[in-house]
Amino acid sequence: MLLRYCCRILLCYCGLVQANAGFDVSPIRLQLSSTTPSAALTLTNRTVKPRLIEVSTVLWQRAEYQDSYSPTRDILANPPVFEVAPYASQIVRVGLNTARPSATESSYRVFLTEVATEQPQQQLQVVLSIGIPVFISPAAGEVYRLDWQATAISSGMVELTVQNTGNSHIQLEQLQFYSSQSATYQSVDSIDYRSHQRIFPQESQRWHIALNSGNTELTIRYSSAQLNGEHTLPIQGR
Image (cartoon, rainbow, N blue to C red):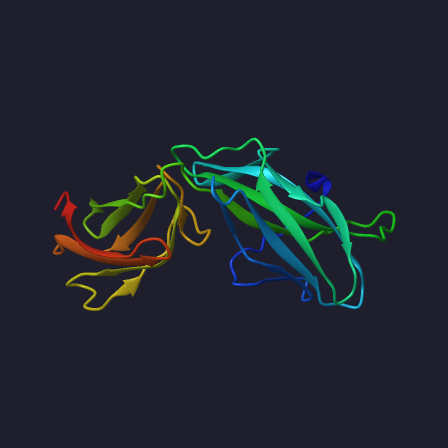
């Protein structure tokens, strides 16, 4: 299965995943629910060689800003193994098995791994693997909510923190800040987790922003596919 391979590369951040310059996967994420218990992925081989693909499903969890995966049959993908002929496509159907919508969104990934058909002895095998996110919507529907806070941690540094207090993940596409010091909106990057700024339910994220002690408030502006907003925050400790 997937864990026996020496190298894994996850590509899941474009509108169309292009792997190995000739292998496309669409869509880049799936959303399942009680009313939409299954969905389909389309894999297209754009090379002159047949491609042997192995499929597996994993539970996707996060702790201390680290992703962890464990095999699961909560969701199923079919077919589990197949070959895609040159310039042909294959549909993989993904659906709920034992998983059921709960109060909070559940997260999984479907891994599509190309299996090398030629394996020379004494040669390190590097295999390309694509991880497609699969989210199961909460039973009562999605609630998107972010709580922001700014705290002075030194005379010249402010820590901006956010906690996802909703029941579904939010993927920040842009985060900017404005202050009397900056004069214009500037972008900031997370210091904890950089996977496209995705914040799971009850998860927090933080950023450090250089601002001198003369600034007593901070204005932030953010956008995502789920939620947009702009807030002016008092800087605690100043």
